[in-house]
Image (cartoon, rainbow, N blue to C red; front, side, top):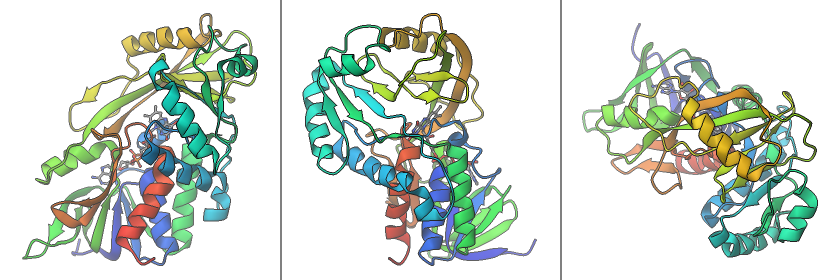
Length: 360
Ligand SMILES: Cc1cc2nc3c(=O)[nH]c(=O)nc-3n(C[C@H](O)[C@H](O)[C@H](O)COP(=O)(O)OP(=O)(O)OC[C@H]3O[C@@H](n4cnc5c(N)ncnc54)[C@H](O)[C@@H]3O)c2cc1C
């Protein structure tokens, strides 16, 4: 094939929720953008995501980014012209006892501009006592307008919207390396189908990013880590089960109306050797999640285990993601390192990359 096969202002490498959100945002701003995905768009980690969108985080910087995502996803069709259902399940955050005061303060801060609120322990018991295994001793953050979306629906929506605004998509094309001019400036990427020329390259390659940067000789502090959630179907339906993060017993998840079940995730701390591949459920991890979940949810013992979801995710040490130019290569913009929370952050990341890469 003749080189280069294609030219653009910006190349986005990786067609997960982050890459497609960036692709759409740039196309909507009139940037000549090409998305390059080694498989089919949306079949990476995003395909396994719970799609939970909520506001509150321990770190106010993350809360503000998540609020940006929450606002965007509540009005996805207005932003993209594509349909995606926002399932308003509500979201409950149960803090660890020593963080309850911080959570109360953060809920008050967020409550000034959103419907986030703090519930005292008696109120938590009144609303959710029928679900709990024991008393909710420390109160909780309650987000009545949070919930989840189907990540595949969202990613395909971003893809269609970006295309309809003039973006180009190359599926089944893997990026192998960066191309550089004689003075070392990045001029694009080399793919299995030839070179693609561009002024800027956005690396939205999720869990593959650490390995790619290492193999290109570029410094980084990222790694791939497994995220796993179990699906449990209670013996009897559990009405009003919200999406949740529980930092007292280390569990998180959401209801799954399609199966009549509820997802229960528990941190794996499983760092994966490079390059990450397709993950399978880890049975020991499933047992840990079941034990942790049963400390919070009264319906969990006796529930039926319906398998679960496990995939590799890109991890960054400070939990604040890497959405910025690479310090040694200004034309290379990173959009990764979301530590298991990248779905809800994708709209924020897209706006940030658009600020860095294209005209306002
Ligand atoms: C089980 C599970 C549950 C989760 N639940 C939630 C949740 O409820 N809420 C939330 O906010 N987050 C959640 N997350 C995290 C969230 O899903 C991820 O942060 C997000 O999907 C990452 O998206 P991405 O676009 O960065 O990565 P990906 O979806 O993995 O996309 C990266 C893409 O890059 C492509 N690629 C890689 N290398 C190359 C190459 N060399 N050339 C071309 N293409 C390449 C890959 O094929 C892939 O399609 C969950 C994660 C898991 C695993």
